[in-house]
Length: 623
Ligand SMILES: Cc1ncc(C[n+]2csc(CCOP(=O)(O)OP(=O)(O)O)c2C)c(N)n1
Ligand SMILES: CC(=O)[C@@H](O)[C@H](O)COP(=O)(O)O
Ligand SMILES: [Mg+2]
Image 1 (cartoon, protein in one colour):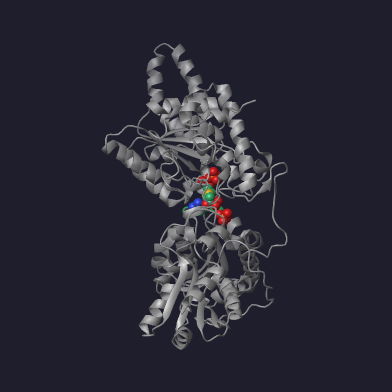
Image 2 (cartoon, rainbow, N blue to C red):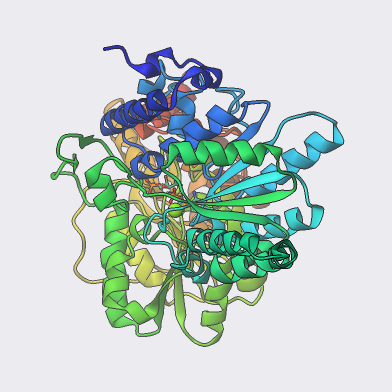
């Protein structure tokens, strides 16, 4: 029997479907998403939760004339399936395949690039204001999750929208989950059990009673005035109503017919509207419904059993080593506290949270707040470790400068996902942190050559003064044994791993291993190189680097960071400042956003491999 989905090549095709067909289509879409994510990996639970919402939006509104903006965008798979990408959907998140987040270059239906949370209302307000000022037509609808609604930026935008009173429809997709169960006062406020249904039933009963009374219409009029009071008192809407939003809900986010009716009404309404939609994260796939946290972002899995496929023989991931080290440090150092911005599992802090619940803080998707909160803790003599992915830490750039570094406060930044992360693409690559941190006074930046050195760097970070960043990559370590005892790494001191007089390779972080491999290969061809594990991007081991560079002359630097302002730049500045002339070649990421794809493919493409280090070195010795 042919799939209804096969007849959907554009959102307009939805409008010809009957309700029964739309409901069948929802099932087909779920099937495709489950099977595709089972093969490719991706964000399963968030996408299964918004299938009806997506169909109702595209059934009622006219994308792209009506702009639909997805906050974070990790829940855009159904949107992509009904906006002309069904046939390519099997390439989801693969190199040169379709992206796992909205991408303007991919479709006119993808209105803004997203990947970082809580930007949709700001972007939506800009779109709505722009439509008005340029006298275009079209509505703006943003879909933002309850987790994303916890970020300060979302409130900045709500506040400004209420002030401007632009025509903007905000759909709050409330599944009571961020990646983990949602946190914060707003979350508990939103899930107050008195629902809009109760308010509506009371209102209907009272209206019917009034209509039967003589002169009841006058009472009814007065009552309508107090309806807002009743509704605010009985629904979570009071917060949004206070910000000049017309609050509607909560409504069932899986009731396709109800959503279509509601959205059809919304088309005629003006001004800021907030629709509170209740959905189930993982809806329609029991393993994901039962465990939406695991199935938030998941690697390939067996769709029959829901069992995530993981090679047991792989070395521990950097995250796992961080997790275990934090437990050990937590025992050693009672002042240690850990902070995450809604990424407990991803950063590896789950075990710490269970072992030291009173010393663990999940502040919600609030990286800016997380950093300044850490500053406050440090001022009171605690030792905060802020575990925030490289790309998300970009959110807190000023807080790091203004609230931590300026006061030289001792805050440790555990920066996971430093470098190429792969399939999440340009919004998630950790390609800038060495650069954006290096320019901050008082900052110390370390990057371990392997998972064993990571634990020593974390241990060292606890005793260094001021702000200390330890950045490490996504994925498994090199596979070296882990020392039982921690040891301190001397501040600003690099490590010579191999000696040779013809070439100097200065590598940092996960590029040390490929540098060593290249050196071994070069040696077989008579080119002897010195390989240095830089360990510190700041402070640089200037004495060692200058001595070796002036002696050897041929120099290569390697980093998994943008070349602009990163480790290689630091070396070039150092050599220049000391008047040392060398033939310096820098390997790193180019001045562009790195696309999505498997990390191995991207490292190959951007020359961050031992093969490419070898080839570059050889070229430096061509006569
Ligand atoms: C600035 C930022 N911090 C952290 C993340 C990681 N992240 C992606 S989705 C997500 C949870 C989003 O929860 P919610 O908005 O409720 O969407 P749901 O997954 O429940 O549909 C988080 C923390 C991010 N994308 N952006
Ligand atoms: C959508 C989002 O931003 C997160 O789910 C992110 O994809 C997690 O990345 P990891 O898979 O590296 O933890
Ligand atoms: Mg949610």
